[in-house]
Every structure is written in C-alpha cells, then in structure tokens.
Length: 281
Image 1: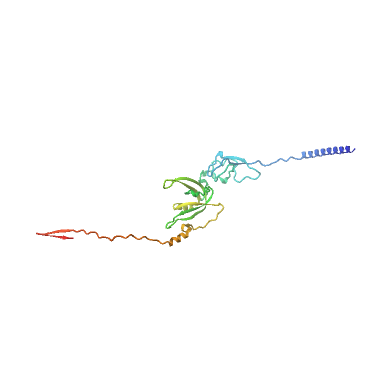
Image 2: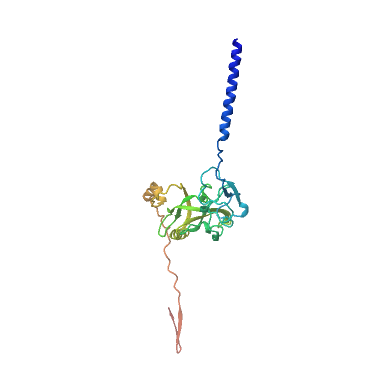
C-alpha cells in the first residue's frame, strides 16, 4: 500500500513538473527577441614595420588592426592609407604602433632631419671625442647639458663651464678620422636642437675648446647656476705650495776679462824734396 502511494506521488510530481516546464517554455517563446546592436569594430592603421625618425611612410609600411573594446579610438588615428603615404614620422615607431596625426610631419615637409625640427629651433652638430657618448646612452630624444673646456684669452689655465643646459639630442653618430699624427681616432658628432642665439653660442665655443655632454633626467627641468672651475680650484694646496717654493736662479758662469783688440798700425812715408820721413798712425 505504501509503495503504491509513493508511485502515485512521483507520477503526480513528474506530470506537474512537465506541465510547468511547458508553460514556461511557451511564455518565453512569446517574448520579443532582443537583437544586439553593438557598433562594428573600427579599423586602425598601424606600422607594419619599425620606422626610424624622419623616414617616409611607404605603402608597405601600413597595416590595419581592429580597435579593441567599445571605447573611442585615440584622436588623430587613421582608418585608411589616404593621408599616410609619403609623410615623415617625427619619432621612432615600432611594429603595430598606431599612426597618429601628431606623430607625422606635413606631407610637403619631406624626409630626414628638417621635418622634425620644431618651429623656432635650429639643429646644430657638435663634435668631441668618443667619451662624449656617455657609454652609448646619448641617443635621439635624450636631454643633455653641453660642457666646454677651453682656455679663455688672458687665462693661464683651462676653464670648464656648462654653456647650455637641457638641450635635446636628435641624432648621434661616430666616424673615424685621423689625428695630427696620422693615427685613427673615433670622433662623435651629435646634433642638438637649440634656439638661434644658443646656436651662436655653441658655434663660437666650438672654436675655443672641446665639448663634453652631461646626460640628465628628462623630467629634471631645473637650471643649475655654475661659475665654472679651474685646475687650481681642484688642487688649492698645490697652488699654495707652489707659491712658497723657493726659486733658485743659477749663477752665471764666470767670464774672462775682455781683451782689447789689437790696434792696427798705419805707416805713411812723406817725401819733401830730397828728404824722406815716415809718420806712424
């Protein structure tokens, strides 16, 4: 009797569950279906190859990738190749980096160094020995101070002074030249961006001595006030000792008394009639 009741209860539960599921299914079928209206992904132009600063963008340098997410793409992006080919990049670009308007020079600016020079500045090259490279860390985009070591007119010793601060390097290259003895010497040419009056300062300074570059943090914008330094300021004790040092002047060697040169004698014979006489001078 108990088994029959259990079977009846289970049967009723199965039928009730089936009817409930069928009812829910019918309700869901009558609901209007919502179609997703997400906007299509935008295509963004990116660098297909690595590009150096000042190089022209070619057709094979351009690729396209979909912009991920629902956020708006960055300002100045490109969806087509139109407006990209033939323009110079203002900074180095790596593969898959997006092309942006702010990274490109105007199309009529050409290629190379001229299009990357900001308005109001000038590109000027300076040279020094290989130590100027700060172990190879002076690269395009770094900020440096230009230090000059020279002997000013009227000075007795060289003076080292910072002549320009916080200037941007746009290129750095090394060439092999011969020194006065004919031996090969590595010389570094560094091109910096300066104002026109600073270009005059660097040009006149280059004729006086040798440049060094002091690498600086690009976030450090403070200007250092320096007076320059001389060798005697580094070694003050050496200068004091040199003043107290007794100078011994060697005595001149004794010389023999001067001997008067032998006088030359002249004899003149005078004849007067039958008389003859001589006169000695």
